[in-house]
Image (cartoon, rainbow, N blue to C red; front, top):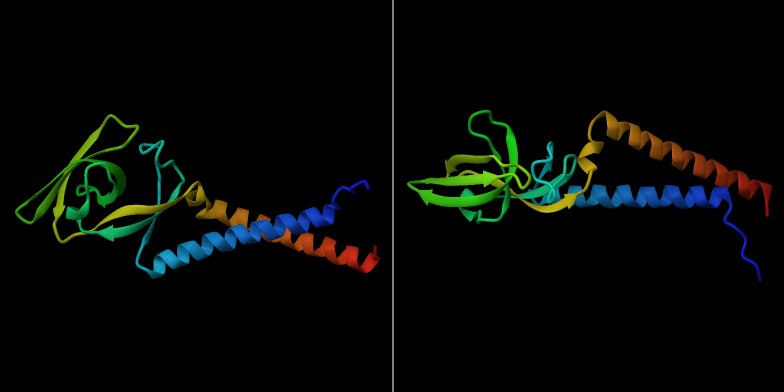
Length: 166
């Protein structure tokens, strides 16, 4: 018995369902992480490649600076500019109520030296969603609209096929 090729309407419905499932899984993962107090961080540079790439979405748990160990990836507010940086810990030492760090991006030759209050907070990544950070803002809106349009077309094709009969 010869198998027939799938009809375009079936392929479109399957693609729309798969896309919806992927988006729902991503949304539930992010929501569950936020409920338990994690933060979302979009990686904005390539200094942590290959571990983290520009555009990755990272879900982080907040910890005291003294909990960080050499080799950990951490996100902290740069003391001078207040900008969030994600780097790997090269050295850490706690003295007189402050925790001193030496950090470095995996693909960067530059070291950062700073200290934070011991009762402060830093982020430690627990999950990474590759390229999902690129879906924030206008790009994400266009991708969402494309998926919605794909779903509408799939449903329309499926209904048309059911009306026409086998």
